[in-house]
Image 1 (cartoon, rainbow, N blue to C red):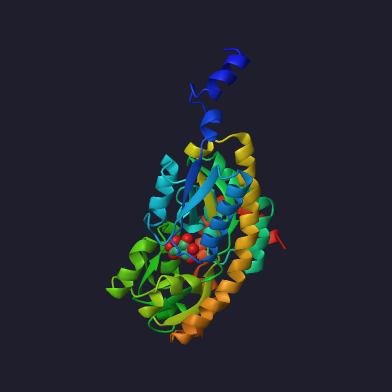
Image 2 (cartoon, helix red, strand yellow):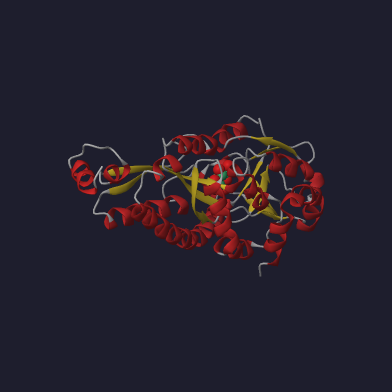
Length: 324
Ligand code: BDP
């Protein structure tokens, strides 16, 4: 086919190949388990506004917040088949899909949140996004988000591993977290985030672990009243794009999305910094008790997990630890 003919045929809409398809108006579906107003949701919505402006309305994003499309496992599956374009999920739930990510899911792998941010912003962060893209998962790793530090909550203070004895504690759906919770002294029960509120309410589980904004916005604080600062997990989140849709985009559109993704990464963090403080204040005002825990004891109790899983990623783990 000559170039001239191809061009004419495309302009006439005779051939539905990708360059033509992308000239059409597209509304991408994005989803998040968190509600409107949550930093992650706001940052993706803002990306949608920028894309709309840059493309004169050709591309826009429709956000489906608050677990409207299910939990993160369901969101990942929808993105894999192209039913959803952007899924913002925890690396906790992505670990079982792209195994290399589990290096971030190990307890106490990061010294603190600043350390985690250094790692995701630098070459390791880039490499892991590329690993997702290159994996058979049919997802494109676009960028990272911050989710602070996860601490345990139940209806009693958990200051040391013995306090978790006999407690059923919800974890994200990843065997690594069940083992971690068991090593910390409790009984890990993997459940989707979308199942958690009712599981707490009906005492299917006695507690959970998460950051303060999640405990607040998912209403867990209405049922569980003591937040113990175990600091066992600092897990970043990722927003991924459906490869099915991505492959139909022009290189220009792909580059545009990539550029905005880095901006999302930086913008979400600013929003997060503010949001965490507000969430803590609201939890306290609602009667949630914040308790200091013996972090060193939990660190020690979880050493077998780092030994077991760390061996697989020894080189990467060393580079993470060496990131200053
Ligand atoms: C929240 C994360 C969210 C996870 C949720 C969970 O932002 O991505 O789905 O924890 O525990 O902190 O499932």
